[in-house]
Every structure is written in C-alpha cells, then in structure tokens.
Image (cartoon, rainbow, N blue to C red; front, side, top):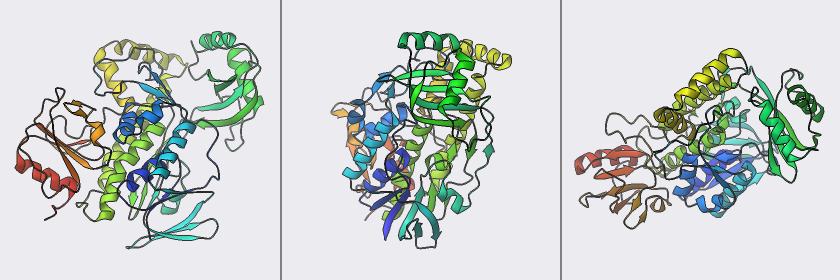
Length: 475
C-alpha cells in the first residue's frame, strides 16, 4: 500500500510529494507526459513562494538559476515602484522559467526519495474507507491511502470525482508562443513600447538566442479553441496591432488561452484531494498561478502527513479546504479585475487611471503587492493577536535565521522567554529558545508551513494551541 499517490508532476505535485516524503512516508507521482515539457508556462516566483523554498533549504539552488527583479508594477502592469515595509525578507520577484522550476523541484523530490513515473496516465479511481484504488492507462492498478489530483485545469481526478468546477467562461482570448524574430532587438523594443501605450495585452519579450515570448490578442482568429494556433495566426495578429509581423519564424510552441475563472466546489472528497490548477484556474495576470499551486502544496503536505502518521487532530485535513479555498477565490477575483484594467476600452482605461493615482498612496501600493505575492494571506484561526494566521517572515536570531531552523517540516516554538515547554509534543514541534530584535512578542508557535498558530507567554494557553494543531501529547 502506497501512502500517497499524486497525479501530476508539475510544480504543485512535486512540491507536495517532497513535503509528504519529508515525514518519512512513501509517495508516488504519476505523470501523463513521458518527458518534461519544453516550453515555458510561467516566468517567476513571488515572495511567499520564495519564502517556502527558503524554509526548506532550496532557495540557493533557485537563486543560482534566476534573476531578482523589483516588485513594483505587478498589479495590472501599472508602473509603480516597489512599496516599502513589506512583511518579508525576500522583497523581490525571482525571474526563473517554469522549465527550470520543474527540473529543480523534480531533482529535490528524487533526492528525498519520491518515486516519479512518467508516461503514466491516471484513467480511473475508486475509494473506500481504507484507501484509494487508482487505474492507469496501461491497465495497472495501484492502491494508496490517499490520492491528490495535481493534474491541471482539465484534471482527470476532479472529473472522476464529480466535483463541480463552477465559474465564469472565457471572454477575452490571447495567443502566446515562443518563436524567433527577423528584425533587430532595438526595432522590437521600439515598436512594442509604442503598441503597449494602448494595448497592454501585447508584448514581445526576449528569451535569449534570438527567441522571443510573443503575446497578442486573439480577436479575429478562429473562435474554435480546439483548433491549435499557427504561426500565420501570430503573424496576422502582429500585423493588426503593430503594423509588422517582425519576421517571426521557427516557433518552439504556440498556444491560446482565455480569462476563464473556475474554482472547485470542494478540495476534498474522502481520501481524494485537489491542488493547484486542478482546483482553480484563472487568467495569468500578476503571475500568480504557479505560486498559488506551490502554496497549496505547502499547506496540504504536513496535514496529510499528520493524518497518515495518526496524530492529526480532528478537522486538520479539512482545514486545507477551509484555508486555501478562500485564497484561490481571492486570486480569481483579483486576476479578473486586472484583465478588465488591461482593456483598451474607454471605461476600463478611466478606472485604470484612477487606480494608478491611488497606487501613489504607499498603503494602497503595499496592499495590492501583498495580495499578488501572497504575503498578505491570513488564515482564519479565530480571534487573537494580529499575527495569528499570518506567515512569519525570516527574522534574524542571535544564533542565525529563523528559516534555517524549519528545514525538517516540523512545528516550531520560538521562545524569547525561556520559560515555556513543548513537553509531550517534542516529536512534532521544535523548541527554540533565542531572541530576535525583529520580533516584539514573547513567543510564537509556528505551524510547519510557517503560519502563526499562537502568540503569547502563558504555558496554559500554549498547551491549547499545541493540542489544536499538533494533536494529543505523547506521554
């Protein structure tokens, strides 16, 4: 019996697999595609995802392959500087192609002992009170305690479960692809700058070696989305909007996407769960999709491991839905709003101008960047201190950094009083007695995902929080 089978070997599935495996459980990832995808879907990682990588000791290998960029101008591409006072030690965007992110996460998953089977498509599933039976396209049947569908927006797992996927249909279509151009870079830059004065859904971005990432509106191209776009479609749209096709040729890949928003009604049905694009789809504005999936995995992994280890308190696994479903709903809302603000129509342009003026207020700028980067996420953990439910940034201690102490995926009590105890929970929670000039509370209890579960200095109150999040004490 496998502990967890994960359908889908993208960033969400790989991150989740590594998180579960961190707790000594056996994990199998089944991926339909025989080889990793060669084209770049996403281009970067936001602050909260960077924090996630840092908490697991992965950040340095990602920094070696990426470039750090300022955080300004991410909401609807309104050009504003990075806000000050962000609640993170990583106030930047890490530009890194998804192909590299996929590779690095796969390497890490393999290092910690995850089995990844490529060319294995899930075509059937059934479950009972003891586990899940998975059927693969080659006829093989596998048995696991839990199954998680991380298999994208057209998720087979979600469809086989019969989970509703309500939302709004696509109204605005775009073409996206990678191809070479036949004119100098200076010409491309000048023309794009002029076109983007009125058409913000247009762009050509250099990827190196003469290859560009090309984005153009799809209005005027066939409305049948099942028909793959051609290089001629791109040339036609480039001429419509820019007056030139830039001599584009030799496409690496071509695609078409819309601004549909859909959110799964439930993230859990018995022993089967959904994460990443299998649970939510939305426009790519703000670059939030890949990040949202990684953060789903970070929230779910330790809870699933606790359930399998037998110490999870009642309702812990269900808190995955109650915490992450509202976060996805907010992303769907803000990406839809951004799509409207990218419209060249007079009404949206007027609203965009007004929002641009509002973004000159530091508090507004900071609020929207915290939304895009997810460092503003606060889970509803009830009444209490303002830190409750929020992530805790990587604060410096007298003996190092906080995130360096979170590599093992356990809870952590950061105790500045030296008077508290986690006796009974020492196998699940690390007790660190240290002091930070950046932390003005006596002690803080962190969940394995870095969110604050308790703040205070009373041992009796701490015991209640330990029991709520880490189960019954071991005697």
